[in-house]
Length: 377
Image (cartoon, rainbow, N blue to C red):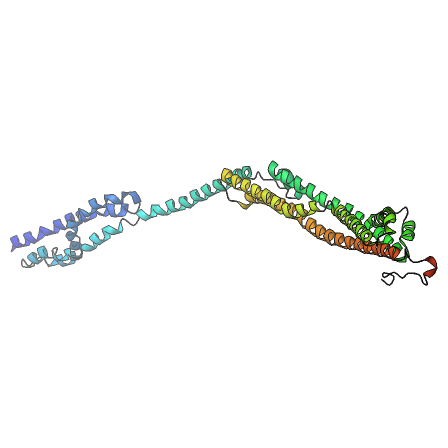
């Protein structure tokens, strides 16, 4: 029994050895949270894990006082084997060591936004310095400013259209005054013709007056004077025809003369829009060339060239529209003037016919003064 008592005493010193073995892996576990970069060394800590079965020996040490029975020594040897299963928490605790590794990522994530903000600030500081060189367009978008900034072809078109517009208004002023004077002279001669009894009286009343109507009276008087010898032998039908032919020629000549200068209005009215369109096409072509050179489709770069091109079209319309309107007004005015001349010619023909009819009537045979058909007009 004494020998058996000595044999159980031998396991007791082995327990401290197990404790020493369990205490040696403890420092790596405590040192793991201090440094996050030592996490790869954790596999070495797992090596002592097989010695972990000795750790339950501490929990089983209270059972060591039952050493006297020799039969219980064998379970004491088996007791460390069964607690090996609880030792598995040390194996599960080993993966907890990599947790300090993410602790280094917050510092990196905090520095990354700071670097991005710094880069954005530097970019925003550099962007305004690059933009000003692009703004090389004229800011004066007034008609005069666009004219000065236009191409020489567009300038030539604008100058030509401006001259055409000036010619239109000049013709309007000149022909308006001319038509007004011609209509006034023709109206006065028509009044003289209506109030005159004979051709000679009308000629005397219109002496010193100009105008086609006065020429008609003079032409009729000259024709009767040249045909006076033939009137004693033949009827006056031939004289009437010759007088009518002279009057029609005077009327036609007066109509052509008063309409002279209005043809340019028709030309300006029909050609000016196309000339302005040519300037527009040329200006837009230059705008597209500018887009290709600057390699940008910014409206601020394209708009000035298009505005210059459209200005040419606007000037063409300004020159064409008044020309067309004034031409139509003059066409109606010339027609009205020629109607006045036709009235004067008919009045002269009546005076000639009256003189030829009363040529063979003795002066005492006239019972009443002749009545003009235009007296009531």
